[in-house]
Length: 92
Image (cartoon, rainbow, N blue to C red):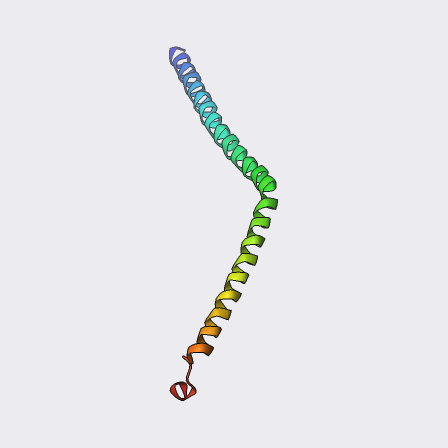
């Protein structure tokens, strides 16, 4: 009978250990899931709030770049015409 009592108390110790271990494990896993969820939710809110302004800024930059390219192309073509840099006999 004495052995049975010690095995039961050993079983209870193991049970308590695993219960504590699982509670500790799941509390950290739950905390990690909560933090990741919070970060994802924050990213989605930020994206929804800032996307309109970001799209507008990109469009403005694209328009500005197109104007700069057109001006640069025009100036290069003008320089080419003025100084006769492109000679057909050199390139043929």
